[in-house]
Amino acid sequence: MMSVVHAGDIDEAELGESVVLLDEERQPIGTQLKSEVHHADTPLHLAFSVHVLDENDNTLLARRAVTKRTWPGVWSNACCGHPAPGETLADAVARRLASELGLHAVSIVLALPDFAYLAEDANGVVENEVCPVFLARVAGVEPAPEPDPGEVAEWIWRPRAEASALARQHPWLLSPWSVLQFAQLDQR
Image (cartoon, rainbow, N blue to C red; front, side):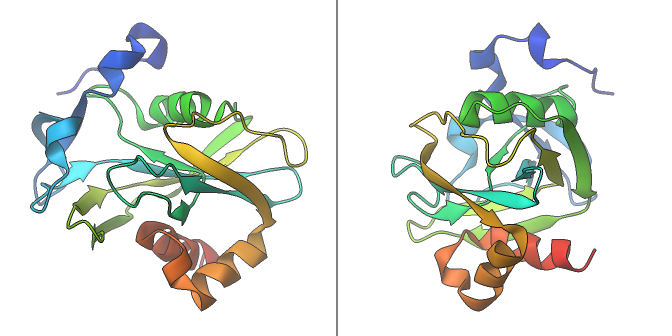
């Protein structure tokens, strides 16, 4: 059984080092260094994805930094990440929002608990993730993120319906996981 670790209990550098590996039943079976897990034969592992909404239901789209190993320079939902071994998903979401975007959510809701996907980027790197999707609400109308430039190249707020339409009508403009997520979130 994995113990619960809260974000404040772990050094930030430690959190990014390992990901939780999963078996076919989506049960934890071990860990692997994040730097070693993503390649052409990526093992199934735990991740999370976050769609950030403001008070007017605008959604934050972020363009991934061009230095990212997977899907560099591609527009996507607000942020994604991997919980550290023993870290709760909610704590990991809050940590990632703060470190990647400089945002603090007033609420974090699990929207798609069973979301998973398999995708290969142009460089041959495969994502193979069980990736619960969260909706994070931030205070105010279109608050200005303060992104980490190593994670986010640029960002934009768009009405949620417009972002969903973009995903449906021009899926090549967004990350494959965000396209799938917008479709499933629209069905809720």
